[in-house]
Each structure stands twice: as structure tokens, then as C-alpha cells.
Image 1 (cartoon, rainbow, N blue to C red):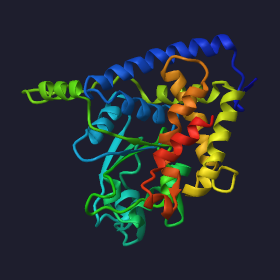
Image 2: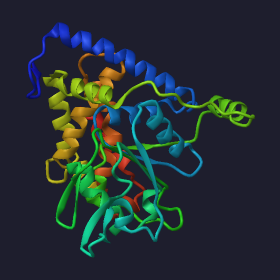
Image 3: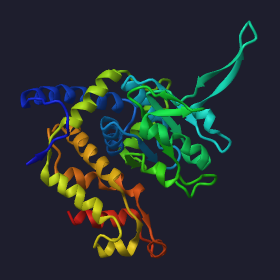
Image 4: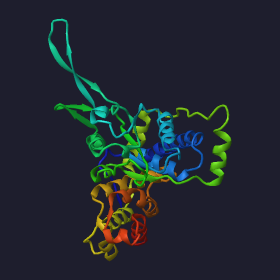
Length: 334
């Protein structure tokens, strides 16, 4: 038994044909990114899965791990209109959204004109997002969920597709602010970027310290990316995967009968986490060349989808327990 989303019907033959074409496009995307980003295959996979699923991603890691380079490369490879915002403590919401200015014509009549901010892009790079105050961080809330912004009572739609890839330094770094919980929930995934393997770092040394660096090339158009995102939403999902998602997400909430969760978790993920897992498992399956997700996809994506949607109790933190530890134990239960 499979669960299908409410989309226009599509035959199995057409689904296979579209999937094969999408696989070829995804292979070209992976190759294009791999020419610039060395190693970090897991990071590239998760970030691309978030984009293919139509969502936003939070890239977390210490400075110097090519977070910004990855976002720039994806913008070029996918052909997206990209903008970058360098978040700083003095950044204001109007610096992101835009503002109205008063103008006077030749007759002396005055009127307001809206000047759009950098958020009006298909791919927004929010660089070091936790350097800005929570007030400024929250300027992205409406845009990330509803794909439009409201300025002075007027609605302004954002370009499609619209994605936010935010980079963040760990909170123990000086001069950072934790992101509001409501905004964290808007990110489809949190992708943790670790130090590269030795062979990848060796390649970095050899290929990035010469006269010329490798440059990314465009291989896809935004309209084609939207078609792939639609195809992913049409992919069938086995009932076993649906049950695994429900079991995992609900077991991560206190008060649902899981003793470990009740002991360690202050608050858990909401239904948006289940939606994120459903979309990401489909996208990961297609990324790997499969036409339907499996329970293994749920296990692989549990940490990046759930870890930023949970908070530990004070006692758990005092014991040295991390969210990753809790999620790892929950994954064993599915």
C-alpha cells in the first residue's frame, strides 16, 4: 500500500520517464558541484536534497569549511538568481525586506515607492545568520513559510522557486545570537559541516592555491528545478515509510509514552517535522536513483530534520546528553 499526494494523475510509464530525465539532471548537478567543492559528499547530498524538496537549509559549522562557497556554487549550477546578505549585529529588517521611500513628482505630488530588498531572489544566502539580532533574523519568518512579504500593509510575492540557505557559526563562537525556535522550524534541515577528510583536504591544498581556481558552471534552469520538485511531490510513498515517520516524530515528543524522551526532551518536533521528513525521503530516493523512498531514508534523514526542532531538559544537558544522542536512540526504535 502506498500513499499519494493529491496531484493530477500520472501513469507509471510517465513517472519512470520523468524520473530518468530527472536523474540525468541531478547527476549533472552533482558533477557541477563536485568540480568546486571537494569531499563533503554527505553535506552536498543533504543540501541538494533540501533544495530538491523545495525547502530551506541551515548550514552549521566553524569558519573556513566552505559553507559560503557551497551556496554560491549551488546558485550558479542551478541557474538561480542569487543574493547574499552578510548578517551583522547592526543589520535591520528593512535591510533584508526593503522599504518605502517618499518621492515627489514634477507637480509637487508626493507618493511612496517600494524599493525591494535582497530577499527578492530565488536563492538567498543568509551568511552568518546568527550574527544578527533575533529581531532581524525574524524578518525572514513570513518569507520562508508563505513565500511573500508584507510591507506597510501591501503584499509582495517572492520569485519562484525561493530558497534560503543560511550559514551559521556554532553558538559558542563570540558575538552570536541563538535563532528563534519558530525560525528554526522553518528550515527543512540543519546540515552540520565537519572538517574534511585528509584526502579531500589534500585536494583542496593542491587545487585551490594555484593561479586559477575551479569555477562552477550552470547546468540547470530554475523552471527545470521546479519541475523536478513537482515530480518529487508526486512520488509514491510506501505505507511502511509513512508509519516510520509518524513513529519517529511522535516518539520525539514528551508525553507520548517514550520514557527516554520524557526524561531528556523539553519540547519536541511538530507536524512540520513530519512534512519535512516526507518530502526529504522522496528527494533522497530520487537523488539515489530510486522511484520510492524506504525506511532507510527516514533513518538517514532523522538527525538533520529533527535536531533543530528539539530542546533538551536542563538535567539532560547537565549530564552531557546531546540532541544527536537522543535522535540516534529514537532511530533504533523504527
